[in-house]
Image (tube, rainbow, N blue to C red; front, side, top):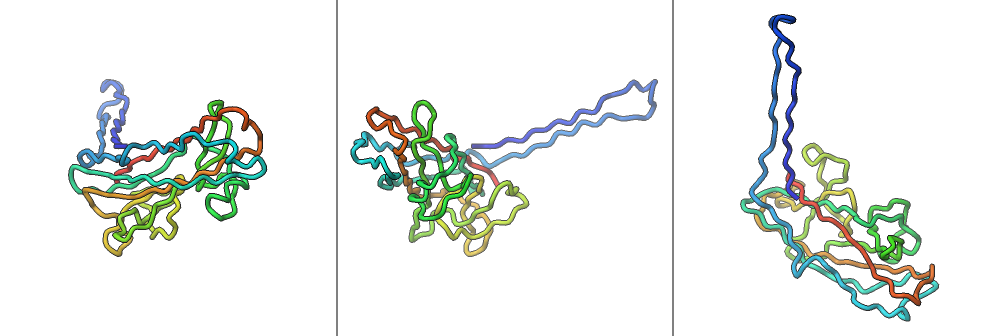
Length: 219
């Protein structure tokens, strides 16, 4: 997602006969960003689990579904420094069942968890996202917690492959904690859902609806 900033500040002009010598100032500010950085999911951005038999889901405990992977590429017209930020379009409050996806205690408003809802907008589970490790270290290896400003915040080495909401991720320049200028950037994402069927409703067909936006931020 390209971001253009264009601000105009107006000052009210007062007739010179009233206040001689006053001035009105117009400021135009902006930022020209690199030419056309485009994110793209390899094979499309839909992870389809198809028809999941209700008999495969436990009515007494959350059920972990198999992990799936998808490739992500960011291509730029010229070398540029960019970061990724995730926004959950189906937000939820984590439950104890979500622990199965990360093997960690869940907390209220935990940024690791993304929501899975049914067509009525009710929660039926959730999922976590991870950057899969790769030998060529192609995945983003720096992160910065929001609301840190990318222009003034401090980048730190990413020690956990799990993606968090309200966090910026970028690719490092060598061994330093400095975003690199690159023309082609790659990552492999792992998606791990968990379905919580303890509220019943397994006799009916339940469409699963999960959605997250990957926002591209120029640095």
